[in-house]
Amino acid sequence: MRTKLSNPNVDMLKYGIREIVDVAQKLGEIDPNFKFIGENIGDPIAKSWPVPDFLKELIIEEVKKPGDKAFGYSHSRGLPSTRHWVVDYSKRFSPSSTLDYEYVLFVSGLGAGIAAMYHMLPKGSRIIQPTPSYPTHASLESFNAGEESISYNLDPNNGWQPDLEHLESQIQKYPEIAGILIINPNNPTGGVYTEETLEKLVQLAEKYDLMLISDEIYFRLVFNGQKYVQLTEIAQGRVPLIVMRGLSKDVPWPGGRCGWLEFHNVDLDPEYKDFAEAVKKRVLMEVCSVSLPQHILPQIYDHPKFEAWIQTYTSELEKNANYIADILSSTPGLKVQRINGAFYMMPLFEDGVLKPTQTLHIENEEARKFIESQVNVEGFPLDKRFAYYLLATTGICVVPASGFFSPYYGFRLTTLDRDDKRRQETYSKVSQAVKDYLSS
Ligand SMILES: Cc1ncc(COP(=O)(O)O)c(C=O)c1O
Image (cartoon, rainbow, N blue to C red):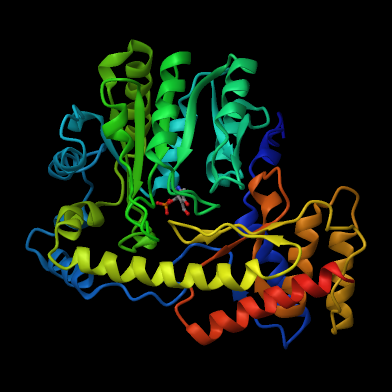
């Protein structure tokens, strides 16, 4: 090669949620009895959630329509009629919203929108990340910056609400911070933010002249008597706010690849408006995002059966999550926070209980040697070590908290499994594995 091809920032792209699947695959090749139980990925379809019939019918109707519009390109920022619907939808929750459909951008899955947004940040401007972090945000932000993430802690002793004192001290320490990322309901913790928390986040953004970026992909999945508080309502007219939504999780149609960005309050600040224009240009380069879901999106959310679907979905998620929390919170050595939204939970290990010598008995000799070769490496995170032993001995695949750049050791699981018997078996095994591992 005449010049370099290896990118020095590539190590900043970390996606622990899928990296552990490669380890599972290798275990499957080694041991014919290995049975994979994926508790690592938030895909409702993979966990046997049925796609509601009304969604399938809408897709079929659209596909059969004369003119075959859903097969063509759509406007590069998204179908204008659907973007107008997004504006109207936003006003249902925040009547004073001034969102303009020209600042609603459709993308092929929210992941693509996240990438586009960080890509357009000028060099030297940073977005502070919550930690434990969702790796798509944290990795893409730090890859773009060419520097490690700057982060603020979520507090496991306070329902995983942001630690606002830590956030403020980080903002003061790093003047390059231009915006605060909020993920609410949160992946990976399942926390749902209170109105008080959101008000304080807006006040911090006002005080330090920052924008807020609010990833709300789980906003319809809230339960245990909690109410989702709309940040758009609180932030209206006060601070620059980018809202991110999509239909991967609530509909659920993750393979449809449809998400969108809403730039609220664009007239508050010329720098922010320039940034919005820059992201619009970046989206233009993709030609258009997947057309089919955009054509039917308003009909999905306004369908008379949609609310009943969300009720069924969230009440089952609530039941599953509370069941798992009950089993795991009675496990010595673990600290478990009940969750109020999304479909993730992050049990933590009590301080000091993990040691670099702990193991579980892996029967297959070759599998044992493989796991030992992976974990007995200088600096291997202690919670990742547990996750590898859990995987090799039970087939259960959880993601170590260190895979989310977490300051605390633990693991993230999903609460999606619909099968009561299998869920009971899985989490009884996790509980037993924690006990055996800690006493090994
Ligand atoms: C917080 C959060 N944002 C964005 C995404 C990406 O969503 P999409 O499937 O629309 O790319 C996910 C996916 O798990 C997520 O958890």
